[in-house]
Length: 218
Image (cartoon, rainbow, N blue to C red):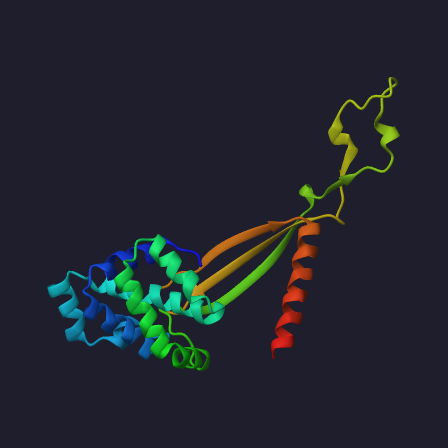
């Protein structure tokens, strides 16, 4: 399981809560798989976290998101002990890990069933997706077949660049992706990935292997 700063911050904030409070937070996450923090806690409860426990609304949201991710990982991999080791290595106290373990023992099977039946609620949903391909012939160099034509009288090649020619059979392919999360104010993000011909071929072969594996699961 990969650990990022959000999970590390969530561990710090959860450690600051008493064990009874931790049982409430983790219990709510188990009770409603994949839900946002606003669906797990009332407005009054959120204010109490802020005023009495110094846990901001953003920190509470991060706790819910981070440990929802942890639970999804446990459901997918069935490796609770390994996850506990990762949590401990990143500073989660043994008492808080024990809360997590006991909640899993009590509600883990039910959570696993419900998480597979219910779509995950996320804050940003992909609204649109577009892509295009550009072939850059200027980067499509292939070795020349007749090397002898580029040798001087001494049998040496003066310019190594002469050994290659631009060839449309070997284009550098650039995929440009445009993504836009749902919401009126969300902007379109663009990113590009450049492949050589052999890399494109390898990519599609891997996609075919993934598709075959998915077909076997259905």
